[in-house]
Amino acid sequence: MYLLVNGIGPTHDDITSECMAEAFNLPIDINEDARNKLEDYYRGLGKKLNSARLRMARIPKGAKLIKNSVSVAPGFSIENVHVMAGVPKVFQAMVSSILKSLKSGTPTLSKTLKLFLAEGEIAALLEKLSSEYPKLSVGSYPFVKSGKFGVNIVVRGDNSKLIDQFINNLEAKIEELNGSN
Image 1 (cartoon, rainbow, N blue to C red):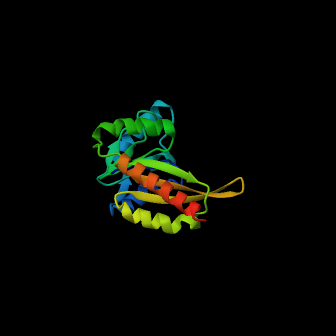
Image 2: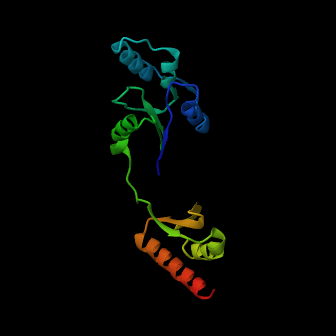
Image 3: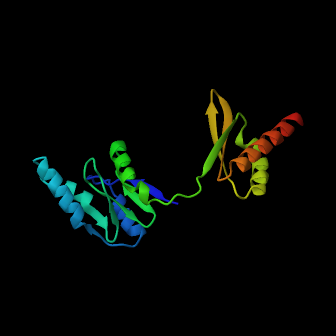
């Protein structure tokens, strides 16, 4: 499993690098490779590498830099966590640069069942049925639409047949409940 995080900009609220350093118990400082890339980039634009821009070179020690072919400010990887820019075009370029290094695994599949029932009406049923399918993750997300209560049941797992079986069983049990009311 990989975690993709964004927030490597030059402003005071871009604290992802500091948070990652703390989370991995690593020191953080200016990475010289990152600094040199930024310096060359801004010099080419006729601008200076000011203190705000230099913040983008603050990288936890030991992190591997992620190439940024759009605006040069690198992201970085620590173990299975990849920190990249939040700007979509830059993010896409950074993801492209690390894609080949990511090991593929079994994809997580997801299916949503939208019900116009209140969560409380199916909570016990959902708990019982979920315990019968320990390989699945089941979430319940309530909503109100046009004054009617509803709930999205999101079922996740790596086996589409098992997910479909869960949803079919849930629908059948809801029908049974509605028939007995």
